[in-house]
Image (cartoon, rainbow, N blue to C red):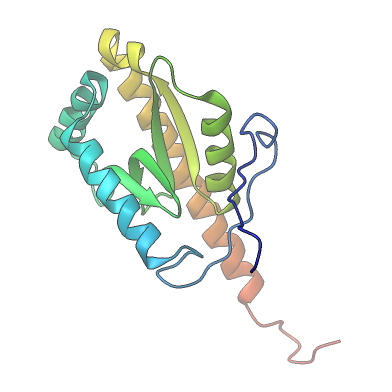
Length: 169
């Protein structure tokens, strides 16, 4: 008979500095269909049982005119669930609630940033006490991402133009 194998998880504090590698595969990520389905079910459950800070920010996003940009509540990105995600900007907003595991959150942020998603962290208490300042910060973050995307597009177009001589070295 073979030995029984057990699942061993690393302590999040040991791996807080290293971002897990992300390989694209099926549905965009190297994640099993059952794991993805479980993540989406968890995100639905999180939407049903949102915190006060999350509800307040979601209400502001629902009323705001963000043009072609849209923030989705409890969006699944890879194997992470972010509080709000904007696909067109490659931007995520994470609300820091009291008692959250910071090491795990930092590790998740590094994973997201490794695939080009910028994570903005906002304290729940700031949302509940000074929504105007939070919205100004989010707007500034959006403008920065729009600028980043435009710059990347410019660089891409410059690098993809054929050279004028017609000959390659």
